[in-house]
Length: 214
Image (tube, rainbow, N blue to C red):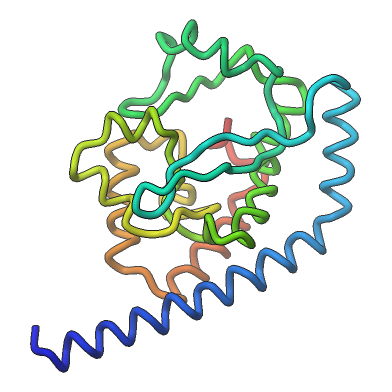
């Protein structure tokens, strides 16, 4: 690649990064405002089922270049869910460095609904405003998952993680870990504003009634 080609590529990447950040801030603000009624309703339902537990659940995730941050979600599990994980690892239903269990006994009644519809992930719009996440990007992994990554897998951490991404709209829990990595790397290689917008619209179409979320 010549110096002029390198400069053009750098300027193109800068323009994309700046435009993507503007879209992230605008989208997160609009989403939080329009969905404020839903936030209140879900908060009431969570508290009604388990008054002692918090409405929101925060968990350390790994973002761009390995930087750790707290990711926010609506709480969909019992309050001692993390301490009960080790006894359930043998029931993992997905390959690779992730844990998924369709009939996870730690999930509450309201939790099953908000997970199936992905409503539990809406508080991640707060992470988008903070800059920890983007609207579109690879799923932010847990630290224990990253410990199992190969150098190939670590390429997922080259960009800001997202609320949705190519993996989420391509089968999600029906796609194994290694397939997820390849989808993320495909996104990283081909990312553009148009690609991001297409993924956002596809996310909306598959959000409700999907059998891929649990």
